[in-house]
Amino acid sequence: MEKNQINLPIDELPTKWYNIIPDLPEPLPPPKEPETGPSRMEFLGKTMVHECLKQEMSNERWIPIPEEIRELYIQAGRPRPLYRAKRLEKYLRLKKVRLYYKREDLSPTGSHKVNTALAQAHYAAKEGKTTLVTETGAGQWGSALSYAAALMGIKCVIFWVRSVYNWKTDRRTLMKLMGAEVYASPSKETNIGKTLLAKDLNHQGSLGIAISEGLEYAETREGSVYCLGSVLNHVLIHQSIIGLEAIKQFEIADDSPDLIIGCLGGGSNFGGIALPFAGEVLQKKRQCEFLAAQSEAAPNLVKGEYRYDFGDVAEHTPLLKMYTLGHKTEMVPIKADGLRYHAAAPLISVLRHHNIVKAVAYPADEKAIFEAARIFLQTEGWLAAPESSYAIRAGIDEALKAEKAGEEKVICMNISGHGFLDLQAYKEKLSIG
Image 1 (cartoon, one colour):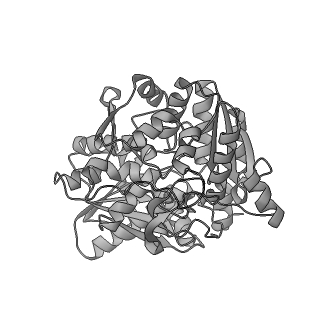
Image 2 (cartoon, rainbow, N blue to C red):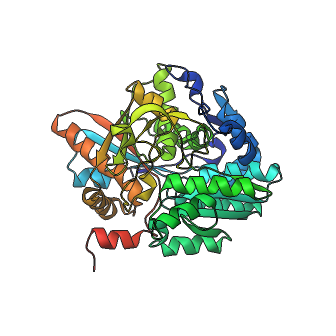
Image 3 (cartoon, one colour):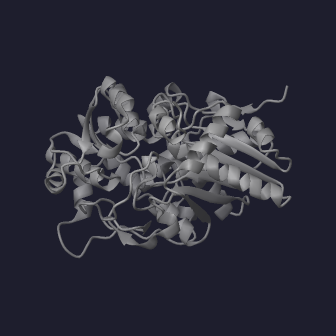
């Protein structure tokens, strides 16, 4: 029997995270202080996990994963399988193209976000923190940090983009079941939230606003620490566990990807699958291309400028060099709200600047995205999250393009999360009664 599922034995779970900084084609542009106002670097030092900030600035290629975190990874279901998408290949009538996908939806909360949530919660608890504070867009990161905080026996406070908070009631229930306090953002819990609500009581919010609220809340509450689920270097380092597993799994399958695809908002799941492979490309160990799938609601890699910008609306963060649409940009709500962020991670931005990472943006009506998700469900049997369905859409498009050109190609998609708590979106977008 030919096996479609490629598993990695538990005893081969990576013992180190990968940091691409030493292998970049140019030094990573450092964070900068703005010309006016208080020091943003000092602010982050007061509000974030110290070990994470240490990793943020690290130039070490390999960062050891503490044994306690590896045990948490195993409890959370790592290593995760890589699949050959044979049924999807048959549906698309592919002869030359082989499709694979990595299943990050198989975590306790349904997404890849657990990989960094467990690490950040572990380090925060070791530093004596009692409360983890964060933002969330689609709700996957909020769920992951709620889960990690519960395992560590500490409190969790979440600021959730209001446009999503209002319709994802079941995911809100999940967070609260794990003990989290969840606020619609903008909220009345912070000054930035009160200011925005005074202008518009029905403000739909954005990830940049929710980040501002989380940072302000963490600064003003004793024992609180702010945790971020995307964009920053340490987050992508923790997520490298995805790509490191996949490298070993492709070796087991005796195959090698020509193209890695992931959806991208800030960059955590795309970076997780892509950066370990990109590192080998930069080290001349392999040839591979990388494609980020985005929404036209927030096409930071497609239409953004490569320049220094703030990571949040209230300008709490240092200036980071990123592909950005501008931190004050208003973006229309979409169902894949995890992709609705104004800027891409600095690590991914520098690779985009050197044309190592390419990007495509799909219409904000998301019709093509949800149709791809339906095809994937009816062929492979898994319901992907709306965000992950952008990777599926791009994977299908690239496979058909290569097949038409008569090109033999191996494509790997990262399925970053499941869609079981997004059924209302599927009902609306696919007109299911």
